[in-house]
Image 1: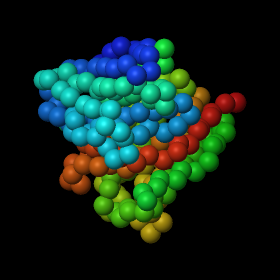
Image 2 (image 1 turned 60 degrees about the vertical axis):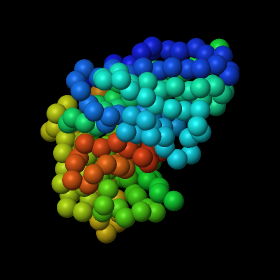
Image 3 (image 1 turned 180 degrees about the vertical axis):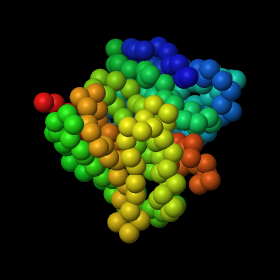
Image 4 (image 1 turned 120 degrees about the horizontal axis):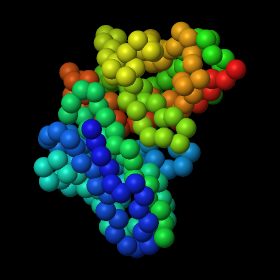
Length: 105
Length: 123
């Protein structure tokens, strides 16, 4: 089970956004993050826990400590408004967290 | 450019059958797993299952085993998701997505997504 927190995060433009994802079992670094903007398909942001996908700017970063994973947006921009999902791909079946909605304050 | 293009929205009645599609282009379709992901209205993402087009090896998430059938046509570079008897609870947006992990492991993450197919089941 993948547990994301918080459910909703309100951040002012230019401020740091920190999203968390906790795995109920060890998943090594087999963790991906996706961004889903309203009315759009998800897009891969991070894979392998910390590798940024092409097309995403450097303000997006991923990190981990044991079974705790973090997606950080260092300086939030208005276009980052979206729901962010984590997904583990270490154990079958792959599972998604319930999502964190990032709002612009 | 990698693209996954899905078939259009569907409005069906309970008990009807349905097959939706996902056509891949811009890459070797045979060499990547293709997954299907459900998103019910206002809800999160649910992994349904995955197929490897080269040999049609198919794995279903336990929650969806027996509820849907996945298939692929290599010659058309197209993957399919089908139902034999739809229920109102099948109303959702369905995405296909390309797997991006070892080809020997169906447990994938997904680097390209289709635009989604909205399936509405209502009497």
